[in-house]
Length: 339
Image (cartoon, rainbow, N blue to C red; front, top):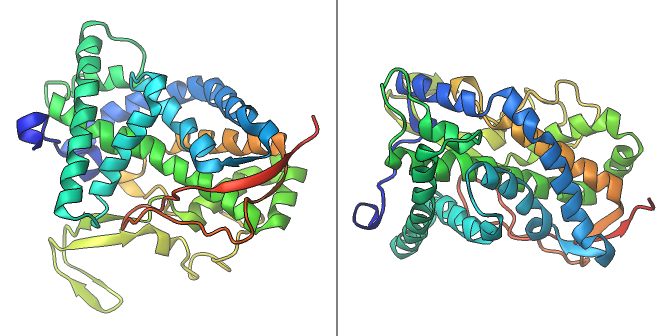
């Protein structure tokens, strides 16, 4: 279907080994360099406050739909040349992609997801073409126009379409959405932590963000192939084996973390988790994600006093997925903080 109606997705950055990975990573490192992330900080802050102010007087909201989805999606969407009015179309496309890689779809469902991804390809192809003619300072322009030194060429359309879904929109919005959603759920479940955070955000906010990432692990796992034979816990894994690396399990390993099931604002080395992976494949969007989480919870602290689930029998449901942990919705009630 991709071949007949769209562009066959190429290997993404996350699925490449060196030397291709190193060569392509250099382009992404430039697109996500610290100065570009710093330049987005004011935009992220203003958007976080605007989103909360849009529903603050109502005393309730669906935190996922009204805040956790639009914050990172609008930020990365602007950098990827998307029209802000198309946010929910893009959300539909990114969900199609992440459901397709969920390992839990029927053939018919997978075909429906592929067709949604092809819609996205035809939406973004004119954006690529325009940026080739008129480059700008956006992240996407860097990806479209940078010549990869070792390849002697920029990314092809097939490669760009693959990266748009996997490493920019899903990697740059879905995962942050999941962390923002999980953070509020944890605060409602841990009212003493919410009180500590409100009373001294300068002291506790950074650790809280890392604890959310550790406990909830928005990316629960990824598939990997063993480069060499290895023995783990007495089990021999041959070279070339397909394995599932469970970041969520590592982040609750009692050999690494004391009381791993506890949300602890005094935890030492709170950032020593695997939520963003590690090594050469460490998530390059981690700095942007942390800034989005910082402003999401800063705005929450500044604007909201009390938090609760919208109903006492609140039953939070998650999308069926083998790799990601994503809430479908999070209805909450709250009282506004006196300004």
